[in-house]
Image 1: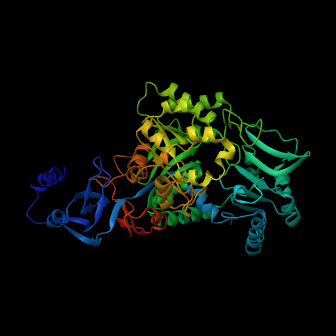
Image 2: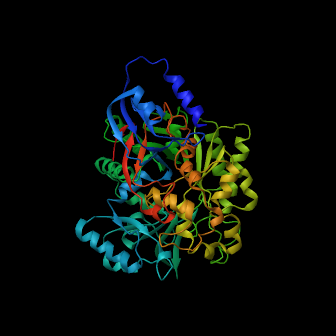
Image 3: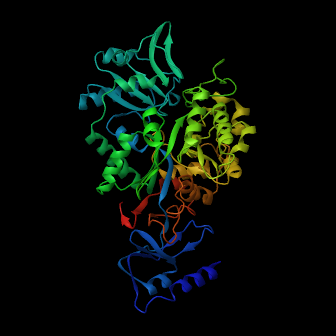
Length: 541
């Protein structure tokens, strides 16, 4: 294969003129993982007009091309820019403007952070997120009593880490008009002894969100720029923003056109009537930095908040099955509408019941439409009988750190048999579908691409637990993981011809790492650092 590659390269350049061809950038003396069809290695490449012009050995590239700038990589490993196949980019940026509750080990610590935040910021409506009662000694949902006492007049709304449960105080409930008599469908407004606890799960959360002050355009722009900086530091050059509205999309487009905002975004439009009416009758919108061609639908909630829709009851709550967030007929109606458009449908499905509804609906609509590439986001718990529906046209899009975050309590929710047969089954999904799109789901999880890689191959936390890995038979190889974070993620976005590998004609999005992620000891992966990130041949980190 190496000889063939060299012959092909030489044949391409034989017709070049005697003087060296001018390009913008040459990277040489590198260990380049091209992630092309053959997973070829190279030593150098040339970049012109923001795209890869040629890839080969150092002598081949430097003898033919002359660049305004040359980078000697000193043997460092180079990869295609990472693609996060499922994240919440805009929400990540907004979260930096709120009280951060990630990593709290008790409800008391949550309260302390809120008090400290409010002393510094004096907000009229306190928002934040990141708490997870599964990390506390008392693993029951908290109640609003303490917040009511400390903040009787200031509304507070705090999202659980997965974004599928909300803790609010009485002032927020009053502002939103939520009472014990409020009706809802899909989710829960918790009550105990006839009183509201302050916990809302899934759909009723929107009542609170509607009552919150909306961010200004300056705050929205700041959020996007903040999220971009964080992502470039981890080698991300494309991010799939899983569920955003027209206003955010248009702001992204405006900032990108003015060159302030450079991140490439694959936008899933949120499933609202307003968004669907605006976009679905139009052609998908595509620039070099923004791709708007998919719809995000929420099938069910999350396992941690017991909102995931299961075929059998939760092992730790008798008679509770979770819930679909919309009636099945509503989902089928939206799916049929999307099927008649040129848009892709990407559906959040955690529980095996939700996955069954999504997969059978997809299958019925796509039987005669082989290249729609509809996606199942999370595909977390699958009945053994339902794996057969996955393919390159019904794509599993998973987030490896969910397995290592949930492994401490997942068996409590599901029981051993259901957990072992079809939960967090990434290898089984890959074998069935032939590809797997990998993401982080930040800010539900951390932004770190290295934690994604580590969770996929090691199936452990950063404390080396559990020994041998969590359900290690479902681990991915390093090559599979790199493909899932590059070329397979690009395929899931219909973008494999322009990104996801280092090949002639594709965007020159690439990264240099301090150590080779494909060869370092497994234990070193979580702490790896990006040396430089390039987007279109321009250094952005």
